[in-house]
Image 1: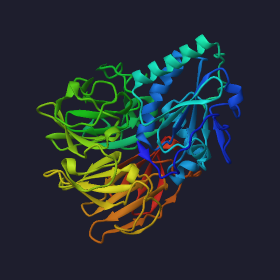
Image 2: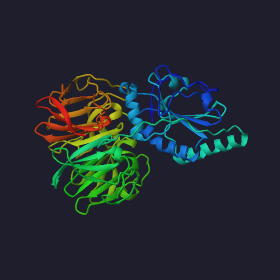
Image 3: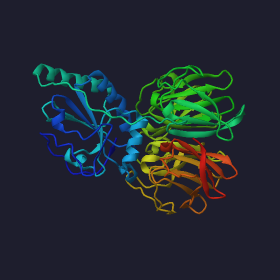
Image 4: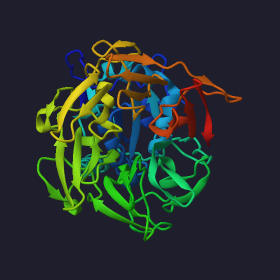
Amino acid sequence: MTRQPAPAPFGVTRAPALEAPGGVWLNTPGPLRLADLRGRLVILDFWTQCCINCLHVQPSLAAVEARFPGEVAVIGIHSPKFPAERDPATVAAAIARLGIRHPVLHDPGMHLWRQYAVRAWPTLVFIGPEGRVIATQSGEPDPARLLAAVAEIVNAARTGGTLVPAALPLAPAPTPGGRFAFPAKIKPLPLPLGRARHVLADTGHHQIVLLDEAGGEVARIGSGEAGPGDGPWGGARFHSPQGVIADAGAIWVADTGNHLIRRIDLGGFTVTTVAGVGRRGPIANDPLPGPIAVLASPLDLEIDGRRLYIANAGTHQILAYDLAAGMVAPWAGNGAEGLVDGAGFNAVLAQPSALAFSPDRRRLAFLDAETSAVRLADPATGAVTTLAGQGLFDFGALDGGFAEALLQHPLALAWEDDRHLLVADSYNGTLRRLDRETAQVSTLALECTDPVCLPSGQAAGLCPKGDGRFILADTNNHALMLVDLASGTTATWAS
């Protein structure tokens, strides 16, 4: 849960109108009024697309909608934290990526946030069938308790005769129809697998894709149907996988939507689950066997031969899976959200979203998206240090020394060499270089050579290809771009 400084809350009786200056309604044909929603329990979901805790709430709300069709109306109120999130196009992309089916009011000025005295992401506000605020819930609700609470309210309204069920007018955006849908992490295969040289998490298609040297498709792993399910390559199921890493014998997958770690055997062509139980878990405090370790939205992976490192974004921790013992243990971060250096539980992270070992394997670089920070961890000691980044509400697009430079919600990184790190500064739509010797951050000036060039779409993957070239997953544009540092150009590599 992320808190924003806000005025002291005030008592609300009659629910304020669903009107916001500059507001944009999405997933519905037009604006909705509270008067139109009378006779239903209305749940306002105050969320923002960057917040992992907000994303965890979406399946719970979908379960409520499925259980009480017509009786409960869920309305998302998108209240942006970052400047990039004020663009309604990014909100529409997030809605499509997350599979949100209810109406969403994008409120770029956070007018309703103030009207409803909201102080943290996520927050649920419950409005009774007669138009009055009856409850507020800050933070992630327990899914079972949420269902039980909603059932109690709905049953009381039925008994009182105030419930008048009716369907909401919906107009969801079409799903992407191209080769990729919201591609995320892409990594090299350490050994060729036939023609395959790279592995990609095709998040929106719920599949893992093997690509050749030119971006051609070699194989797709997974049926494309969202859900858990081990088995042969073609029949296994994933749910919004985002992270991948490969060793000589397997591809490891951060199966984000299932809260699982999966192993794709490159010899037997099968998919198995090695860690997680299929639901969002709490802060990791102790080592646990993989089959009972409860994960929370793993976003990326790295591997060093002994351990598989897991960016467990939902608890603001990096976990380590012991490849020999099959145990999952906390490695960095104590579960609080913030920016504090230190070793192990003394470190505080904020939604770790990308991992990358340096070429000499002596440093594990990672991104804390919510503090817009680039950080390093020592594999030998677990000590975490910060290169650039200042805090949860310190972000921007400023080059300069490590102490002054600002980024905005970066999501992907790769090493250029042992001295230089490249970072996809996702919400700024730029590629940044960090020089560890000079302690400077700079923005690369790149020219797109495509016939039609689109602004970068919140890139979530970056992969070295050799000779100063990198593959960038241009996530919201559903494409993979080839970045050539020598020529200073970018062009579509696969789409």
